Amino acid sequence: NGAFYNLPLDEFVQNIDNAIENGYTVALDSDVSEVTFSGKIGVAAIPEKEEDAKLILTEIKPEKSITAEYRQAEFENLDTQDDHLMHIVGKVKDQTGKVYYKVKNSWGAKNGKDGFVYMSVSYLKLKSISVLLHKDGLVKTTKTKLGL
Image (tube, rainbow, N blue to C red):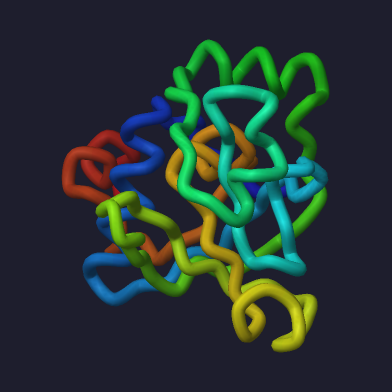
């Protein structure tokens, strides 16, 4: 029964990145029911082409550009649902420079990559419901806007 702040999508991601870059971790509430989320393999991504849904878990493939409108539509049609909590502990880049969030999953060290899922920025933008982070992890403009 707590309050949530509904931030514009880019600002939402900026605050997650700012928290991570300043030494804070982030609690993540996300949808993990997609075929492009694999707790077993340890990858979560949103392929540009639907036919790449299985391949994107083991190969680097182009991803969809996620807009606020697309995100909202997926939420309203129930394709994005609130079904799992995880913990963002850092960020990594693959060999092409593509950024992934290093997400601690609760399914144990035998799942994913030693208990971690590497979630692409596109997946985070589309399938995240909410985050919880320390107020000092917020960017200054957000902190001011929220009166914190």
